Length: 237
Image (tube, rainbow, N blue to C red; front, side, top):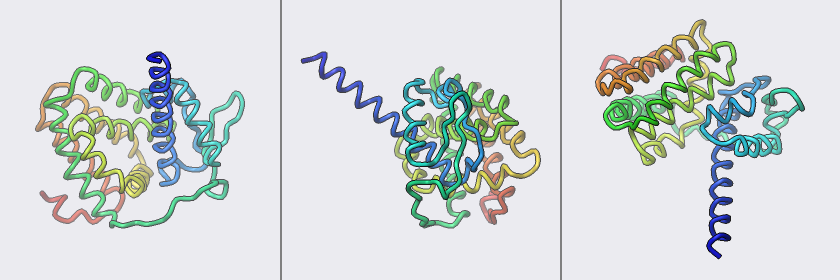
C-alpha cells in the first residue's frame, strides 16, 4: 500500500511539474516572447535551463505540440508555430497598462533582488550564476536566451519574494513578456541584458543587498526605456 501511494504521489508530482513547464513555455509563445520560427533548445539543454528532468521536458514538448504551438521534427529542434496553427488561442484581456505592469515589476523585483542577496542559499546563488552563463552562450539563439532570462527572474523572485509575490506578477506575465520582447529587439540589447543579469547574480553571490537591488532597478529601468514606456516618477526615483 505504501509503495502504491509513493508511486501515485510521484506520478502526480511529475504531472504537475510537466503542466507547469508546459504553461510557462506556452505563455512565452502566446505572449510573443518566443516568436514563430524560433527554435527551442534541445531536450538536454532545455531541461538544464528549466532545472527539471528530460522526461518532464519531453512531456511538455508533446503537450505544446498537441496544442499546435510548436512543430516537432525528428533529429531537429522543435520550432514555434504561427498563431494560425494554435489549437487554443489566449483570451486577449490586458487589464493593466504596460506602465502599470512594469511599475509593479520595479517595486516587487527590486525588493526581491535585495532579499535574495540576504537570504538565498548556495544552490540558488549557483542557479542564478548558471542561468546568467547560459544566457551568455545564447546571444545568437533568441529562444534559449529568452528562456534563460525568464528563469533567471523567476528564480530570483522565488528566492527573494516567495510564492505570494511571484503570484502577484503571474497575472500580468504575458504583458511583461511583450515589454521584454520589444526591449530586447533593439541593437545590442540582448548583450546588455545578459551583462545586467551577471551583475545582479554577482551581487547576490556577494550577499550585497543594496548592490543587487540597484542592479535590478537599473536593469528594469533600461528595459522600460528600450520598450518605449513612459516611466515617469519611477525613472527618477
